[in-house]
Length: 173
Image (cartoon, rainbow, N blue to C red; front, top):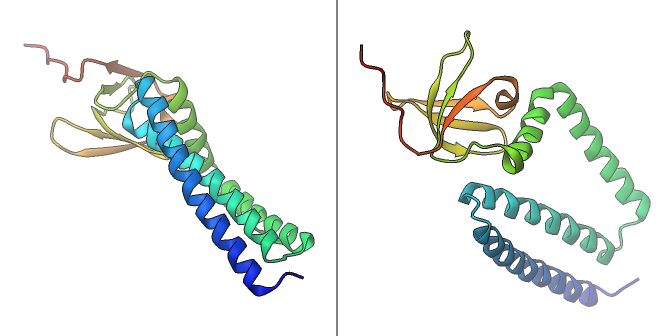
């Protein structure tokens, strides 16, 4: 068993390494994604994913430093995963929205500033895309209302996208 002082020093080293790696990864990813000309919101999502990975790694290292037994860690992890599984099963649309946000990030023509119009007879909404996050896309209408559309709808419904960042001109009658 390690002494308390050594555990504290190792903990400080892990936390210092975590902060350093996070900042380095953030700068490298941000610079790389700027060169690929992705929008700021998509860069933020990538940085959040790296932050999650580095946080999980730091937690695993800290549990090793403080001497948790493998069966205790396995019990804790299985409890957390079971709770998440039940939550995702209860809210299946939540999981589909997260999956859709990943697909939109990599493979959808919609980006911030685009003017989007739904092409469905039962749903009539349109507006400029002002925000894209893990669950919703926010549209600002001509009446300055904010409409939130679940990400999964971008794969269920057809949309018209105007990429010139200007609202389409209305037909003169």
